[in-house]
Length: 178
Image (cartoon, rainbow, N blue to C red):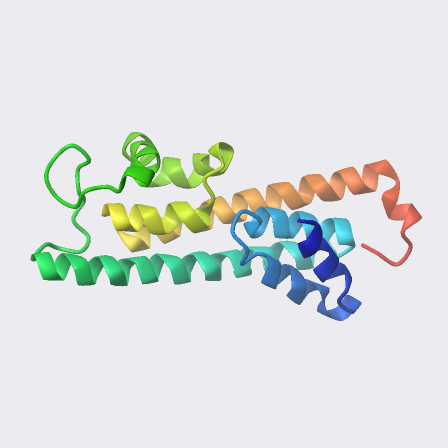
């Protein structure tokens, strides 16, 4: 986070929104962290939030559609439909041992739940979204719920940060920002 913050701070004022956009591509920083960094650095929330949301959506979309392409190729070789859900306990694509925990959350919560609750359990969208597609979820449904989660959490995080920065008096101590 410090490196990302320093990167955005090191850019000229007019390019800091682009810096927020680029930082949102980083897994575990994502839109929430990028929006937070942007607001703390002094990028206005009306610039930081859309930049962070767009960057994160683009990164997640690339991962989701790449995962769908891989799943389509694998399932075509096996003669299955690419969007067919694969039950965890039944026959079908085996879940790798390291993905069992994530797959259990997916089965329990579904696409909306994992998209909205995943960040609370340190499951970033950059990981959850392509995993859900690889487990058999429809890519368009995954992207729709990821968009809801990204917009919600990025806006919430950036607005809380803006409120705290404004309330703490840091805003007055840093003339020329916000």
